[in-house]
Length: 314
Image (tube, rainbow, N blue to C red):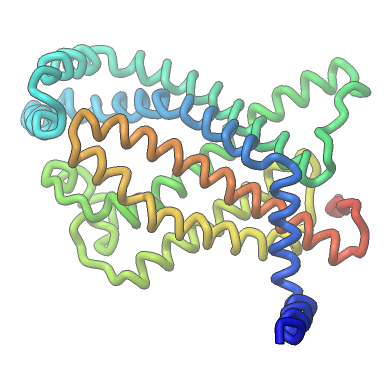
């Protein structure tokens, strides 16, 4: 009986080609140390968190500085979240920031550009290792080519940030922030958003998940195609983007809403827990993205019947 069961499993394994691709993708994911690559991605992403916060506060100061009522409402909200002993420090810091918002925003932009380059280069090295088992050979390049490559990589990192960043924010808005019911937040953004995206508006779970899934697939496809240093055909990337996008959507359903709930519920201790949970969430994002790369690599090799990865036609 055990023998017949084993034979049935072998036949099932041989027939289901997709299962074999998933398994070989997992083996490649383990062999290329994608766990460490995801940890490096999480580290560089955390570096960009505070510059992004500076930019957000700088933009917020444009409204808070003009409207004293909104500032008082924000301070009352902060007083409900943080311990009483920290409230004077936060109020003084926020007041000083409103007077220096433009300078802090410029500093945040410069730091964000620097950290975005680190994130992009980290992801690109990992993608090149998966596709070609080595980074692009730059030893044979001339000095002019090295300078051009340096500038090009920085511009590509900024363009990728400008494209992916708003999509990620929109995804989180649709799945999480849209359900926040702070009245002063609604007074800012209600006139700028369509009705189905306004906070507190009831939206079906199917529409919520569908929008998040489409955004996650678009972000995954952009990253899978843009990150390798040499162009890749789109054919193996489309299923990989769908797989990675589905994983990211599931991750957001499991952890995304917990980021806000944990920080608001447990006050000061929730800040630490929220940062730890955010780090775990970013690590999972990197792990899912690298698995999508592995899936695309394995599928590309099977489609072309060889181990080497073909390049896209110029």
